[in-house]
Amino acid sequence: MKDVLSNLRLVAPAASDPVSVAEAKAYCRIDGSTEDTFVESLIKAAVRWIEDHPFCSRALVSQEYQLTLSRFPDAIVLPRPPLVSVSSVKYYDVNGDRQTLATDQYQVASQSEPARIVPAPGCTWPTTQERLEAVEVNYTAGYANAASVPPGLKLAVMMLVNHWYRTREPVNIGTSVTPIALTVEALLSQHWHGQVT
Image (cartoon, rainbow, N blue to C red; front, side, top):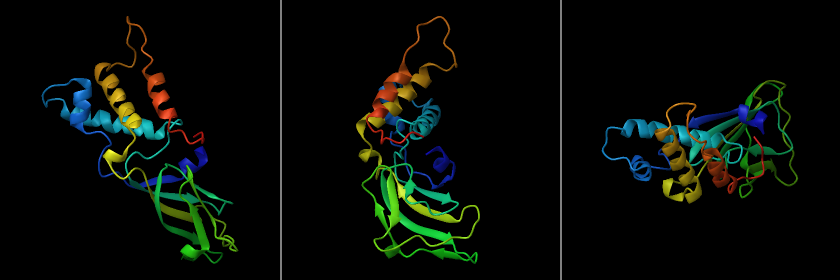
C-alpha cells in the first residue's frame, strides 16, 4: 500500500475541514478570536496526520485524487476510502497514444474499503506502453461534508488540536507523559480497513 500511496496525488482538496474553528475552540475551551488562525492551522495539521495514519488512511471530507501506475494490476486499489466516484481510467496504449478506457470495460467495487477497480466480466485490461505512469485513475473520495464524518474521527481531530495547542514544545520535560497518541489511535482503529500503509 505504501507504493500505491507514493503514486497518489491530491488534485482538489476538500472544500472544508471536518471540524470548524468554533468547534475546536469550544472543545479546547478557548475564548476570543485572537488564536483563530493558529487553531485553523492546527485543524489542518491534525486532519493531515489522521488521513496519513496507517490506522485510518482515509479521506475525511470529499476530495479529488489522481492515482498513476506503471501498468494495469489485477485489481486497481484506490487509497483513501470511502470512495465517492471514479471519473476516468486513462492509459497509454502500445503506440504511446493516450486513451480513456470505456466505463463498460471495468467495474468498481465501491463498497470495499479500499475500493477496487477490476475488468468487467469478459474483459481484460488493455496492453499499455512500457513507461512510467502508463495508467491514470481519477476519482473522488471522502465523506460528503463535515456533518457526514464519523464522530470518532472528528473527536480525534479535536483531541490532537487540543494537545498541540496546550503542548507547543516537542518534549514536555518535568511532567508525566500523556498517551494522547494511544487514545487517538484507538479512535482511528475503529475505521481501519485492514490495509497497512
